[in-house]
Length: 208
Image (cartoon, rainbow, N blue to C red):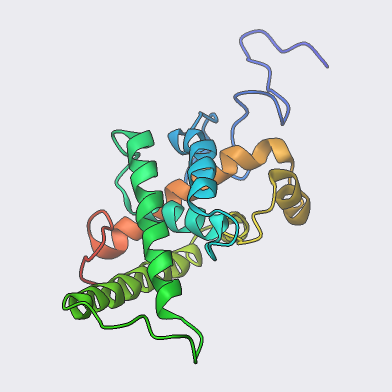
């Protein structure tokens, strides 16, 4: 490598720490910085696995995806990430369990006399399901508006097959080392688009 000219800082090659995003997604390239969301990944994976034991009919990957969608609705990381993630995973697990109970196969034995409060609970469950579907449609529509390769990157991260970084990088033809910074930039863009489409941070129950 040739020595840098006096007064000029040598450029770092791709893959070195601090290398700016070469694709310049969502503005001028900036040095890669750790994202708070990356630190939530292992905790979210562990909590989702704990709430989706074998035989329960609940997929841990589905819980993770639902909680990531909730995170994107927030205006920045939660104040108490660990507490928030645990609560969000449990909420999604309970909602999934309710859906499984409602989707009993035809001919399944009757559960017996209904509780007087079942009607109100069923109404709330339907509302939760509609709101969740509405949030997912909003996120998917915003993903299509992302610049550059962000739509492919975010779609791969939301894949229910839960591919590894190495698999995603190989599929998209980019280096594995650049995937983390690109992921952070793309998720930041996605949050900005979602917020701008409703005029304020996207939250559950906002009118659209």
